[in-house]
Amino acid sequence: MFGVMGWLLFWVIVLFIAGFVLIGIEMVTPGLHAPGIFGTGCLVFAVFLVSDTFVEGAVITIIVLALLGIMLSVILWLLSKGKLKSPIILKEEQNKDKGYISSNDLNYLLGKHGVAVKDLRPTGTGNFDGINFDVLSEGSYITKGAPLVIYKVEGSKLIVKEQK
Image (cartoon, rainbow, N blue to C red):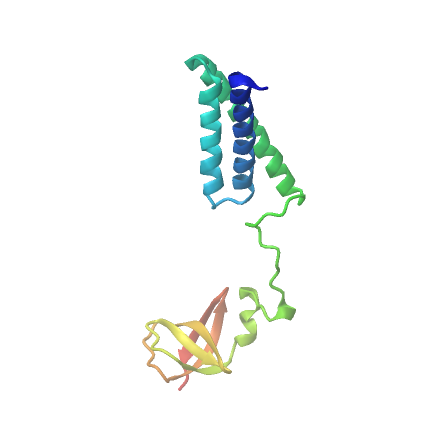
């Protein structure tokens, strides 16, 4: 029915399609590596099966690379428009109503009194109202258990001094 050349052509087409599909999966879910490796293998094997000379193989390889470039640009366009779900883009937001605070919101801690959980040399941990925070002393060594007060907030840094 097919003959030797018919079966060869059939397997070349199957290998090209499988290669493009597997590389497409790798483009959408990077980091898996197996689909990309097997897809590349399928494409290379298909090029070897279909080409008779080195020049013909080089031309087919250039065509395959051009098609992969077009496929990559289409996938990137679909990802950027939100038409494909990307596993590498975080969709959740960290809102204040869910308990998340940004470093800009730490000003409410100014003047809070707490205790040093660890020695501050000059950084360490301080406990304020039952919550541990990474703190920075004003340059001096403060021992564990010493009473602290937050006197300055610089971005996400809480600067403390020993309360006397």
